[in-house]
Length: 128
Image 1 (cartoon, rainbow, N blue to C red):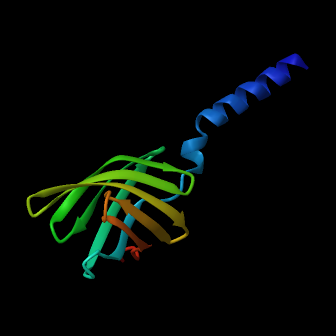
Image 2 (image 1 turned 135 degrees about the horizontal axis):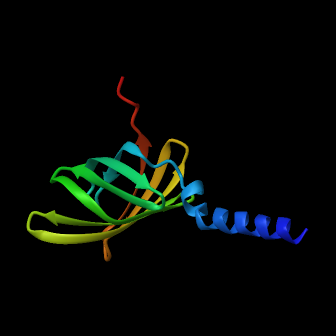
Image 3 (image 1 turned 180 degrees about the vertical axis):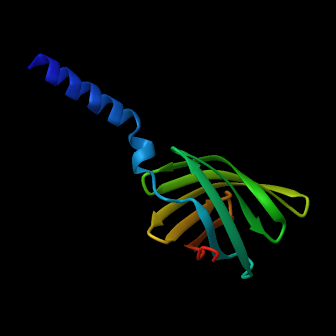
């Protein structure tokens, strides 16, 4: 009896160690969305993500080209990462949070002061 309890405890311990990877949302692939800037303009963004366990890498493509995300993580349905952008010689840093729901990603980009942006990105259809 003690051996079965030990085996069950060991199994549960291993399962819990890998739980973040097992329950991470499916963020991999291409996502597109339009964000409204404080001056009323709309910017189209394309986001490409690749997860490995709880870590996420990728790029966001906009008017200034490709920008690599840093410190990317996925925990359940929550995506977080940082984004450093050069906006015509002005460095901007954003803390980004996304909530994944099926094929939609509700994004918040906190750049401080007036640069708090929200938009919804949709998963791009797979190339055929």
